[in-house]
Length: 216
View 1 (cartoon, helix red, strand yellow):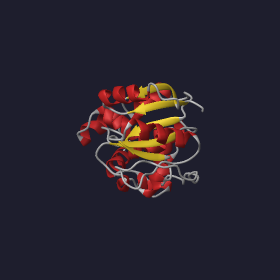
View 2 (spheres, rainbow, N blue to C red):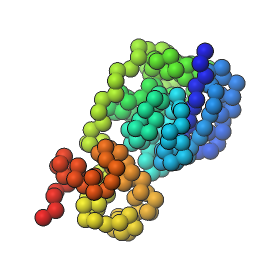
View 3 (cartoon, rainbow, N blue to C red):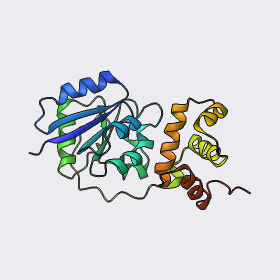
């Protein structure tokens, strides 16, 4: 059985430590690396060979649902397993479900976690009928659908408008009552959603899609 290289993304150190201990003796799991946020995962581990991403759904800044597309671009070969301690599978939008390989409640036991990982490694999916039931293998998931610009949150659209005014992160943070780090996270998410690499390109692409008005 091949051993998976895992990336655990969760802002709770205790949960990451506990999950690492649970998986330490698993025959399906080899190397385990960690990150406390989506942006830290990208900054610290982009380019690393990762088979499975275990991604918390509730995190400050860029949460798990918003971060799926970002992670898909930086870890294209990885299968993504969403993990949640409070939300059920029904809270995950259909367009996000098409991007991921499965769902796990944080209450899952070691057997279910190992089963989900092994299933995803084999090309299957793990979507239990409800968050309390054991997972089961399914047919391979269809190819991910393109991520629509409508996935931008209202707050990200506000930041996008601020970008069209030529404002820096510091000035945007002041006007919106946010920290500069939060603004940086939103800007990074906007660039990823629009498929561009610079603020100027983001503005042009947003204008092309009708998300903002062209400057007059």
